[in-house]
Amino acid sequence: MTATDTAKPTACLALADGTVFFGKGFGATGQTTAELCFNTAMTGYQEIMTDPSYAGQVVTFTFPHIGNTGVNAEDDETNDPVAAGMIVKWDPTEASNWRSTEELTTWLARRGRIGMGGVDTRRLTRAIRQQGAPHVALAHDPDGNFDIAALVAAARGFAGLVGLDLAKDVTCAQSYRWDEMLWAWPDGYKTQTAPRHKVVAIDYGAKRNILRCLASAGCDVTVLPATATAEDVLALNPDGVFLSNGPGDPAATGAYAVPMIKGVLERADLPVFGICLGHQMLALALGAQTVKMNHGHHGANHPVKDMTTGKVEITSMNHGFTVDSQTLPEGVQETHVSLFDGSNCGIAMTGRPVFSVQYHPEASPGPQDSYYLFERFADAMTASKAG
Image (cartoon, rainbow, N blue to C red; front, top):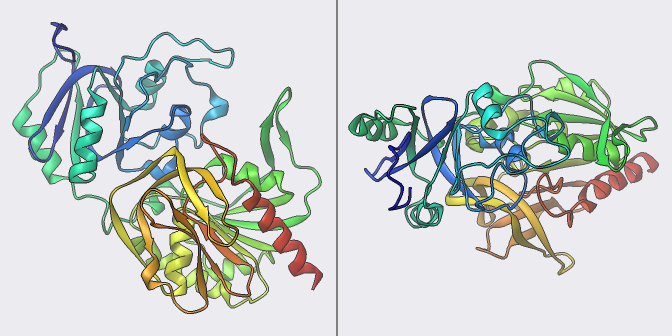
């Protein structure tokens, strides 16, 4: 809150190192503990809050205008918000957008998620960059009564994301079909009625817009839970297998995901495409390792270089773990790298239609430079079926 704001704070953010931020609470009341990250995207706060990859995290938005376009049911990436809470600089203003059906503050309260405004988010972001993604406790009390010592203790007691399998918490309960395509003016979402390829998508926390991209690329998509086996996948006789995004430590999820992927890879002609956690799962199945990053990549302005073409793409990212490129085995090449820090952003098997990327080519939110990857997956399935 500003120095001239004399109103009693109604929200408190306590970091595990004892640092405390006060502000104005909105949304749900109560308390939550999580890892704190920051996101630099200028649009898409609703999509970010409903992205399953944010399970176990409170998101600091560096862009100050959060809430000014409201929310609507069409922009949810899953049924409910998954991020534990949000931190913003300015309190959300009254929504003004023709697609808005509800205020952000009302939506958060109804969905049980805490928001906090009036925070110096630049200072908070610098703290995250310098010390790594901290463990925090976020509390909202309209009466402004906070036990600071207890909040700091709660932050220190948070177990963290290392070793934590969160995919099992956000995956679908049972299989389902998906045929909704990308939103387009003036009709909105259309249905895929003439699919060319049969795809099985493994849901580690899949965003709806990724599934829409697959449908728009000509795919008839069947989504299976994260715990599906190779036998479950191959029994559907797919033309290709997709590995989705998701939250948590890839090494923990890999306990059951890696054996499934290895079984699928025994079909040498079967195209496989992975995004985000799916990328990390594929890397682990191929023999590489993953590591926790200092503060991860979260935003819609991340430059990535395609090492095979020299092209630079501006991409959307959301990950706190990364594939260690030094551990990639023979027969697996690094195809993309981050121009921010040189970390791995893509791999491919030599001579096989198996590839994955760390970033989010579905652009929800974000730039659409990388949509070609869905077309590449579709082309790989066409080539596989042809010969």
